[in-house]
Each structure stands twice: as C-alpha cells, then as structure tokens.
Image 1 (cartoon, helix red, strand yellow):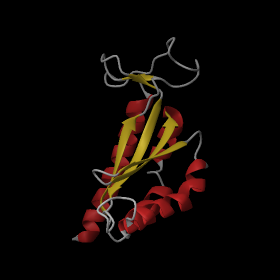
Image 2 (cartoon, one colour):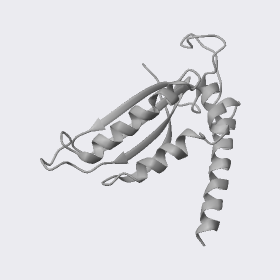
Image 3 (tube, helix red, strand yellow):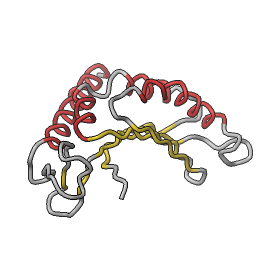
Image 4 (spheres, helix red, strand yellow):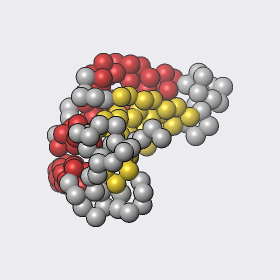
Length: 163
C-alpha cells in the first residue's frame, strides 16, 4: 500500500532526523562535542567522529540528482540541467534565509551530477533537521523529480569543513 510506504518513510525520516540531531549535539562515542584550538569560536558546537581525528563544526544537507546530456552529448545544451539551475535560482533566496547557511552547487559534466549543498553550523543544522528540512526540501525535491530527464533524486547528510 503506497500510503503505508509514504507514512513509514515519513516516520523513518523523523527518526533519522532526531537521531542525527541527537548524535551531532550530544556527547556520544560517535560524535563527541569538543572545544579546541581549531574551533573558530569557543561557543560554536564542535564534534569529533569517535577517535578518528575527524572534527567538524558544519554539516551539509545535500540534494542531488542526475541530469541528461543535451543533443551535443554534454551539459552545455542540456534542457534538464537548465531546468535544475532555474529551480535552484528560484529557491536560492529562500535557502539563504536559513540561519547561517552557505549554499554551494556542484555540477559534473562527466557523470551528469547536479548537487546543492546547504551548509550550516551543527546547532543550526540540527534545528532544521528537527523539522525534517521543511518546507523547502520536499518542495524543491518534488519539483526536481518532475523535471523531464532528471533521475536519482536523493539527499545526504555530510560533514563539511574547510581545512
């Protein structure tokens, strides 16, 4: 039943968001908040992945898809890539309103990737995760899925640090 799957996916998303926020904002064996000399601000939340030496203060929510090449075989004349960029241009002002958000776009002409990363400090990102990245994520991804030639629309959480 599709209704059950949608409800189950929404419940799973709520659980994943809650777990991510808890993991990123509390002391655990996986992510331990620390304060150190590499921390840009003593009040900014800083986490470490176990004892790997990987520390971070920022998390990105990545929205990605595959677009189809244009008649030339590449991205330069791709109608689906043009529509992806148009959609991003429409949503960019709303994304920039998110607290302390930095927006990046990555496009690969070889593997036909179109990616948008919304990078925020841990605390701000956790608050957005608590509300399941709404309403922006479902709106944007829904419209992205409707673009002819777009496939593999996905999301991912990743640490995002300038080194």
